Length: 295
Image 1 (cartoon, helix red, strand yellow):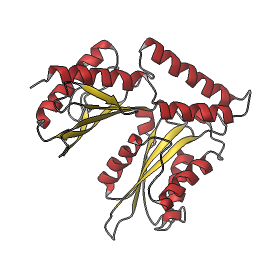
Image 2: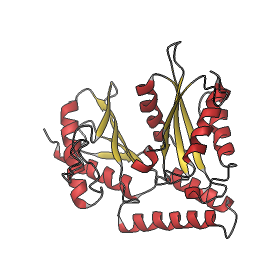
Image 3: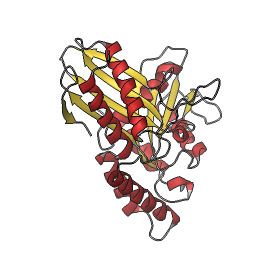
Image 4: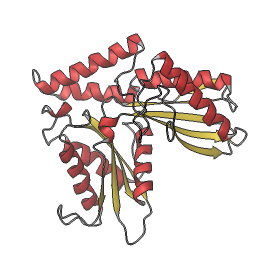
């Protein structure tokens, strides 16, 4: 059953996610723009990015023509039936696509056919959880294909990189992923990382790290220090915006830690491009009222 008031609120969530950079990401981009050497290609690339952000917001048009994989992260009250939410969100995606907030990006993996709706098997994708607080919170990420292509997963120990099963080994493989990307994926980007887990949950949890604000602090001091060190070191590699050279290769690094089996030690790395599409809101339990924007 499609819940009409919720559908309209989700269309607005999709619109804002597609056309507006979150404030924390925008502040970080502006900070690094000031840090870039003047009259360099790196500075010019960031200036073009800044103009793109302003135009997209002013014209209410997508920041990037690749509006990406549509990922809903939902915390819902037990009174809201998951099937109703999914059906309503799928319809919101169809209508947002018709309005031009989403490009017609989703194709059948076997036939290559594009039906123009952005709805199909696994599209959009839902991380759906229930809560006892009686609140509805919906976060949305739009993850482009270019940045998805430069994600990576390592199994420690890695003899090639002399990376052992410890935090220093994790640091080595994460930085190797940045080095291998060489500016692909529309940098400067943000890394979402999972240390541990299995191959599937590692990648899944790494994408949840994009829901964190760039200026937050990890509660574990060791991980917080590692996040900051990786970003600082990556920005000394000289890769720079779009791989043109410069001081800004990463805008941030966010790391999750998950239990693993003794036989496995995976480090899973997801990459988000500079067009960091992430937004969220809280709603009344039935979704009829939008109460607060989260970013």
